[in-house]
Length: 348
Ligand SMILES: Cc1ncc(COP(=O)(O)O)c(C=O)c1O
Image 1 (cartoon, rainbow, N blue to C red):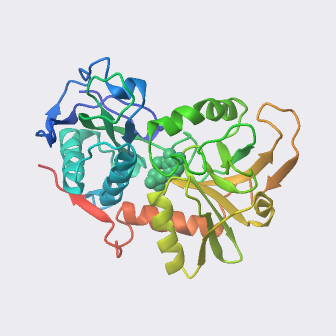
Image 2: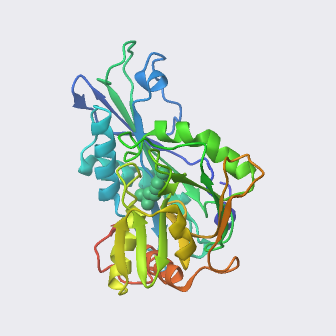
Image 3: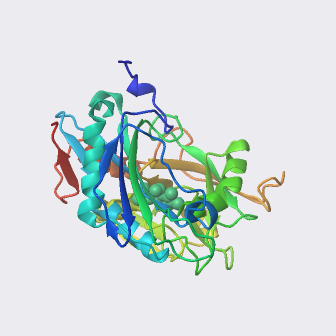
């Protein structure tokens, strides 16, 4: 059996031992099965390949300082998947079934849970897609639900809390005002992938999307939410077209408990000049400080219309660091979980 150097993991695929699969057919869910066959046999006319009735989730499992294994707020992921599937008019697993299949996946891959010292975690990826053969554009009758996992380190491969740069997306949009941005659909990522890749090729760590109607206010990063700190206030955009991040929701609770004012509201681009700290936040990125945001007429343009410099390029801001320490402290058992966010798993 290979020895895995978990401390060298970035956010990338790593083969594990098993996945968990359940099928919704003829109006009912079948029994979830653990299998070591990672190849699904799916009809080529399955709707997911054509019209993209597909949604997914991402959550992490941590080994704590006390060696106990913790899952962070899986009930929230279950609810978000239900809301995504409802938008796609397809069947979804109950909260209990979602959590149970996540647990089955962790148990089947127990040796891939990274040790506490490595700083890595086990990322769970539940995926739900329309799997019956169809030709016309309509919602899926049959649905396949798969939970898979991979041990992961930090998202960018950089050290945790290392500030990075971002660029505003002026010539590419992510999600329309009355569109699907509020749901975790694969289609949202397909539609922003080109711009996301371009930003990375240009050397930016993050791409920051604006509202599609006016391009005047901030929505979110390509794979994480935005929050800024100023005057002892935690500010995050309130928009019907950003993904309701579970990390952001948790951080708002922690921020309020730290005595910060919490504001969810429109954040105009110019306000970037006023923030003392800016971060991206999400399950994969945790909290990643952003020290520079470029505003350009177009991604590939040579011209930078305005450059926003925020905090230090070498260090995370003090409030963001405290937020990070608290949330990670709860996830890793360094701080008591007074919110009831943790579900424990015991080795079988
Ligand atoms: C577009 C987008 N926004 C925000 C997030 C953060 O959400 P969460 O904190 O639930 O992981 C993610 C990652 O899941 C994402 O892909």
